[in-house]
Image 1: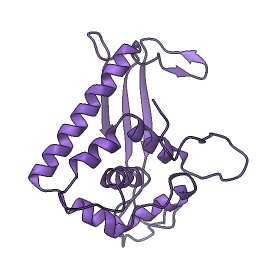
Image 2: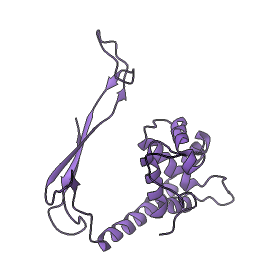
Image 3: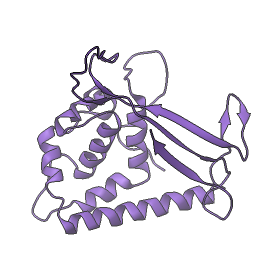
Image 4: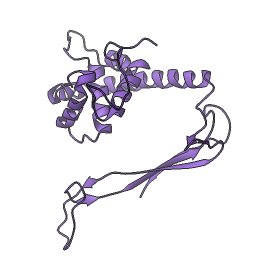
Length: 201
């Protein structure tokens, strides 16, 4: 696929100039653009007689990326500011609000249809490539193994409990652990033992 206008000179490196943190956010945007999701969302959100300065598809994709980076409110779209050297200026919270205000039943249906088309397109590409590669950890290929990926996140909650200590982020709350996993398989689009699951504790 052709590179988009912002990523033609994109380079992944640990040193040099123009570095940004949270590089995973950039990869999410590149994936959305290159698989066609950003453009499909933009088309689904098109309103007659309007020509927004910021693509609504970009705004919605940016909002999803901000959530992945920890945003919990529309104003938190500012978290994308650290990616501005690569992606350009992030949509404002008012732009996000105007975009989300378009979410009537008809528009939500169009968005769901757009996502379904892109999901089908991506899975067709995966199948054409022979499926996902075998999972590899520490240089060892785990063909047919069951793997578990553990991760945790902080959820802020007020506490008046005597002796309660703050988290390392200086706040109070819960620290649920989420586990997701599945059986390593070279392809998950056809018949076979490939499975995935997730849970929170």
